[in-house]
Amino acid sequence: MSKFQFPQSIASRPVYGTLAPRPGKAHLMMADAEGAEALLDLAAQAGARDSGLMAKAHILYLPRQTGEAFVDRLRALNPAQFYVGPSFDAALPRLRRVLSDAHMGLQVYLAGTEGLIGRAAAELAAAGIPVGSVQTEHRGSVARRMQCVHCKGITEDVITDPFVCAHCGLNLFVRDHYSRRLAAFQGVCIDAEDPGNVPEPVELYR
Amino acid sequence: MTIQFNDETFRDDYSFRNSPWAIKRFPFPFHEDSYMYSVNMEQHRGGPAGSVFEKRFDVDEHYISEMRDRAIVLAEDPLRCQSLPHMTLAGWDLLELIMVSKSEDYPDLFQLYRDGNRWRWVNKPLGIDDSFTFMDETTLPHGPMEYITRQTQGDFAVLDQRDDNLWMDAGMITTQADWSLDFDIGMNFFEWHAPVPLAHEMGIFKRALKFLMNVQQGAPARRLNWTMTVNPLLDTSPENYHKWGIQKTELTAENIGAKQHLRVELQTFYRLPRSNALVFPIRCYLIAFQDLVTMPKWGRRLHRVIRDLPEELATYKGFIANRPLMLEYLSRFDDGLPTSPGVWADLETEPPLQK
Image (cartoon, rainbow over all chains, first blue to last red; front, side, top):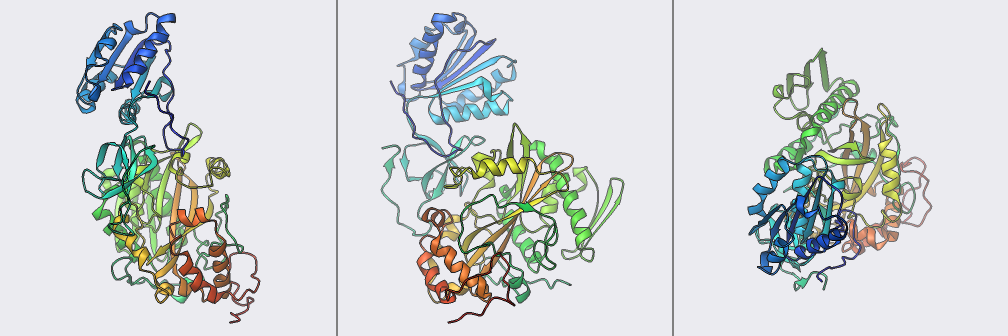
């Protein structure tokens, strides 16, 4: 079980729930790494009530560091369409193509890291999918997707605070302030008022 | 009166100065000897002659230099001005509001001639004389919001109203107290205020949102907000914080009177007619401590407010490290005498400093 209970935070910080099967004409499921476990749980819940869920499901799965651990079990759910991809960027053209055909009644299920959930949610919003038909569940790493407020570059999978911006090299501290449009938290220079005084990085939520 | 425009800078050599006229009309934000958050809204229907509240969009001696500073910021970072695609109509609404207001309130400086949709706009201080077609973007050098806010002091947040909330969907933000339009664009009222401490728990934002969603056409509202800035720096943006943050450490007992500025925002709120958007101008006024304390009441009161401010607020406003230095300076201008209620300096009736 890889569920992490995030402490309560400020109003812009996303909160995540638990996926539950809903009636719908089509079901789009996207997950990365341990997010697969949330989809397996979803299918198990649905199995008891709605055996048609997977027959109308399209799964986009990005195993990342989990490799083959969950791939066969997801395939065994017999979704109507099953895609396994190496990265979000690689999966993006396919996601957009799927959304271009989306109709009223589509249900969306996002599971995994905050970076995956946030980027997919931003694509869904841009495509006009109503937020009420999107469910999210966090699983796996608590790493964050961070925007450097100074150079605007995005650093993926940030696991410590502070961290070094992958683009401009500034030492940034990790804020909880979050932009849905950018699908990123905000990183701000930590030593602007005392150059060189950078605290030892600490793993997030440790 | 005719305004004598200053030739001054808000960066590098910081030649910004307030004249005695500007000091006297400064919008001092504290109506009593202490400060806590409140939804301190009032109708924006003019104010005492000569005050910054008198006109709909106050123009003062800093106008030309502030517009020059804005142009510098935009040249360095065009992301300070953004408008999501559905906000263009609100941009035209804003252009109309400002052109009509300024041409009526300052006819010697600004003129607007309208013949149907064919408009001519004359801005004498900036030497602009443009003819264009209202609602036709191709006839202006920039989008309508950017065009008019390059000619109007203050930041502008343009808020869409839908789903019982306000959404920060467009803005011109170059003189901000440390928040990023590029990051916050698209957020709702609670999201973009998320980093503010204490006020959420106090219910401030729920009440403020309720008030703002009910602002009607022709009935604008206003409030004051404040913070502290070392040097008269308009562009205290998070984008450039790694460059200006160090200036906060350069205060000394000798230079604090000239370097430390009280930064006051006159925030106004107007309903826009076609888009039903709400425009939120945030006008920044700066005053050096040494100028502010020439008004004895303001010197006494500022000392008491800064001394008694809760630690969270001093931290959020970014001056917790400099507070001891500020208090050391300001205490010299507080003789313990009582102060009259209200924000006005009351120079004729308040006693001079007794020490």
